[in-house]
Length: 548
Ligand code: FES
Image (tube, rainbow, N blue to C red):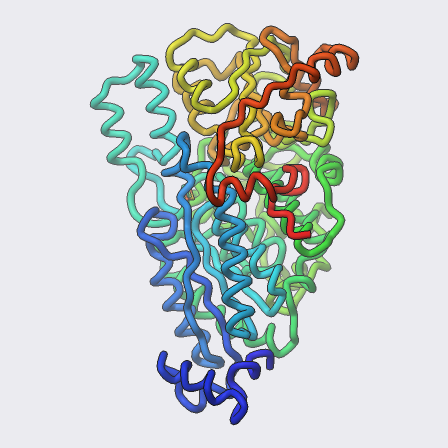
């Protein structure tokens, strides 16, 4: 056992005496030592209940091994969105994964169970487990229930847009604020947290059927208790994340997320997971995988339903079984149960005829919402989310903002003409720094009713809650003198999701001429943000820290 490095008698007597002081008994030293990475925090409803879940995991683990709970940091995207705090969001993923790496290796744990609730904890936990690469399980904190009148956090962001457009009163805005987010759990639509939880289950590192679960539910507690036994089997078989997460399981995950209209952030996280495990999986591969898939889910943000509705209509497994039967998923991928995906679903009946998840022949939309685009405005690629009842191609004239704040101020104070492409730049991993999410500008556009005829492109990111005609992750970013840095007002830009293109109609000679007048509008960064600016990778590699 790896943990003999701290538990072996008599060589490790000094280490053992420290452990005795935190409650170890003699018999504990002969057991597998399991780290439970809890992302518990009172700062956000997404993680508010995770201390209860980590206690349930501890109870389950202690039946067969010895559990030790430790904490990581947490950032709430819902709270930091639209301000300076969001610069720390993606960086928090790196800190969470690194803190798991540090604690697990420093304590010589034999296995890990990590529990995440918010957008960045989930990939942070998964990447951390991949870095340490010992038997590991990820547990999702679960979804929050919808608020009053089927509202949620995105409803409040959009109400704010309506309020500034004088479409609702201050009283109505206050009602939205008070009644939309109630209880604990992650934001309730197919936003980043729920999308990433489903990714974890499809990658095979979460217990089957645990990704589509209510946060405050008996099933969630049972799931936590049972994880101890599952981990014990993983330890006996020495099955690690690198044995479970493979090119094929990554492909499965991206296909499901695309069909469900999931968050663009999943692509960023999957690229980072692939990089951590040294799997060759790039934006171009994702483009090929998603291009011919339709959008079949009527889940929020662009649809009508919440994840709790999906739970009530039978969960995720029947849908996965259906995808397996029609050959979309590779069923041979190994999972933490020790069985393949196919075997896990052996006794599940497929059921694709429900109002949330349409049949592939009669989808919500024949094309996919998630599109990878390339072109003279994004030579290394970018990610479009086109929820699109409004066509697949958008051509419009640019209006330029060199920060998110500039754009929000303008949107609230000015009438934006139809067929405008809002360009928000210097918001990339290095430029921001931190690659902020543009949920406030997209919600503002929806709130003022301008989303139909306006597109938004950025080297920043989008929240899983954003919808409309939006293109993010443009790479190379403005800070690195990418072509987005030389776009000027009234340039003609085309977003063509049919041919996977993002172009502006300027010839190469002119682009090079404009580059001579490059001006860096990025703000000065301090502390860890400055470190991230220096060390972050391009978004086409997942915007992680470059450790090489
Ligand atoms: Fe945490 Fe949405 S803010 S999941």
